[in-house]
Length: 243
Ligand SMILES: [Zn+2]
Image (cartoon, rainbow, N blue to C red; front, side):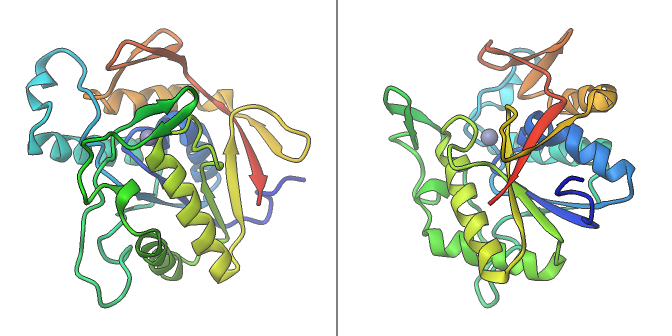
């Protein structure tokens, strides 16, 4: 028995292109292979992220980077088996009556050890500075459109404290609760009150989806190498905890 047993459609909410693959790629691929409908909402286009050194580095700091990251996300989502993707702030992931908007990547800096905040020079239209009610209303709109049986997003730390991730957690849990749709948070370690899924069989699919995000990362053996040089293991196991 798991919290996914009776689930027929899932809506996954992430902050930036590549998060869907890095943190939930194996889960999405596994669910999609079982015929479960997967909808993906992405809040920003990762405009402030660094760019992998090489032919794409000319895009850094230009509007073309957002376009490239849209294309990369589209390819990765297709590779994982996502049925439909949406941008937060654009219909149908936009509250009725409001003009479309973009939530921009807030960037991140350490405010004090262990506590991250938006970059001091982040735009006024950055996700972390946008009214929480507005992002929540946009999520309510897409939840009413998709009517998933389960919503999945970050836990309250946002995984590692990125302000956009934390914002997405807060807005998504509020929107899910307002409609009575179950919400599960992503855990990267097993916990007594959570379900744990070992999805190593999805490794190749996750690697293929990771490679779609060529402006953000490279794959080296069993590691993800981020544009800044940090390495992370490729994750194919994930915990989910109902909130
Ligand atoms: Zn992110």
